[in-house]
Image: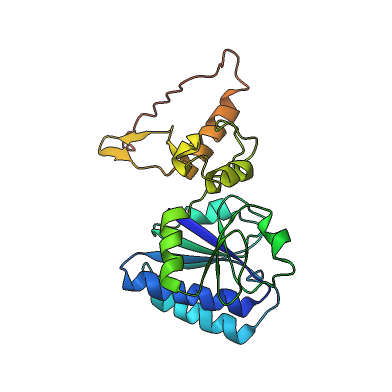
Length: 238
């Protein structure tokens, strides 16, 4: 799954680029969903623009999937609902585990924004040093398909970096690839008589941490592979 976010001072700038990308991916027959952090679509609010965006998202999202996420849920929780090839994440500026597109910033404050190392391109009229600048939405879509990703926000350290944010910066600097994240290799396998149930890396990591957390309190537990078999339920007797 490719996830990309946006950095802007103007909510209209974010909405305009999201709508343009939804249209572009629709024309390419690439499934695209929109995930919005409730009340944090950008700096400032424009209710008319937000309403229009919501209407067009519903029409253009290939899987008819648009989610508005409230604060008590994490970004990772919401992504479990998505089956689209691309997710456009609006808001979530505190979650630094995926790249961003810059739009609507002034050159005066751009250096501060760029220091986080997560901006993959700038879209619009501005010219910013050190990143790709484009006025062409097709080119921005190409960049997303090539560079967008989402790390699991587990900070497990198995990649050699102390946090997923550090590893995201390493990826965008060209010194690693998203596939190098150990959490992308699902360690949990769920089998039924009818076959194996596919598990996404995010869900796999949650299941693994939950089970190991419960087992760690048991005498004799040690790290390593864990196998748990649960027999099927017998039919209830009448």
